Structure formats: C-alpha cells, structure tokens
Length: 167
Image 1 (cartoon, rainbow, N blue to C red):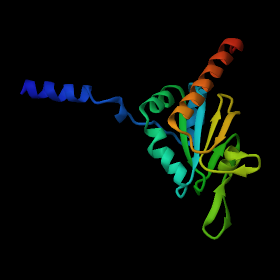
Image 2 (tube, rainbow, N blue to C red):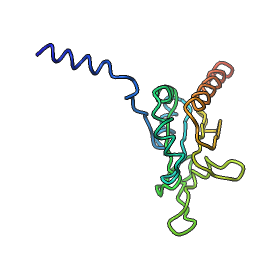
Image 3 (cartoon, rainbow, N blue to C red):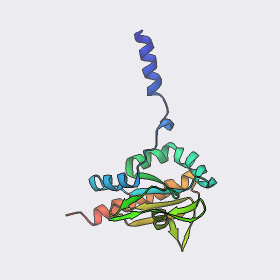
Image 4 (cartoon, rainbow, N blue to C red):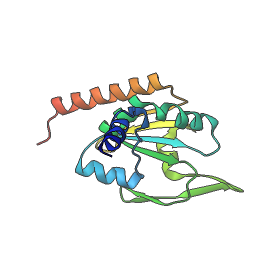
C-alpha cells in the first residue's frame, strides 16, 4: 500500500510544468490586486469569432514559459471585446455599445485596443501599476514575441523601481 502511494506521489511530482494553469482575473479583480500588490496588467482583448485570438489562446497562452512569466509577474485579464457585462474602472462604468443587429463592442475594449483610430483583434495591452498604457500590440503574437515583450516590460518595471523609489 505504501509503495502505491509513493508511486502516485512520484507521478504527480514529475508531471511537467506544461500542466500549469494560466491565472486569469476579471478587470476589476486585477485593478484591486494591483493596489495591494503592484504588478503590470496584461489585457488580452479578443472575440469569440477571431481565429487568430483562438490560435493565441491554444498555443501562445498554453506555453509553460508564458504561463510562468504571466503568473509570477503580471495580472492577466482576458477581455472579450463583445462582453455585455458592465465594467467599473476609474470612477467610470464601461458598457457594451451595440452597433448593429447582434454586433457591438465594449467601451473598455475600445479604450484599450484602439491604435491609429482602429480596433483589431487580438490586441495585447499592458498597463503599468498606475493604470497607464505601457504597450499596445495588435496582431497574433507567437510565443517568442510575447516572451520578449513581457521581459522588456519587466526590465522597464525594474528600472522604474530603481530610478523612482516610492516615498
């Protein structure tokens, strides 16, 4: 009996980190957590019909290194640009705005994914601890590209801490 328990424990201990789950938060949860433990927020703005969004969800965001970097250093928020749920942020309630029959876009998605007067999917937006936009990137991102962006963001955050200490 003890041998079986030991084998089961060894099995779970040796499961690769690829089984790790990406922690995701609602926008409100991430903003609240940033107040308690400041970290940048990575917002993945997507839709259900976007094939490149689905590709990122099923490849880039399943990568163990991406999962580890995001879980340890960021708050990750997947934001469906067509959600009909109101989102409160910075004393404003962002709402879904219909623009046709069964179509529309959420105001927060518009605010976070507009680049050169255009919204496209997928968009990655990174907010700093003061909720200012550090980066907006519209397009499918491969694992290596996103890792590079996240590491540069972390370098910037470390520089900010060293250069401008909080009183």
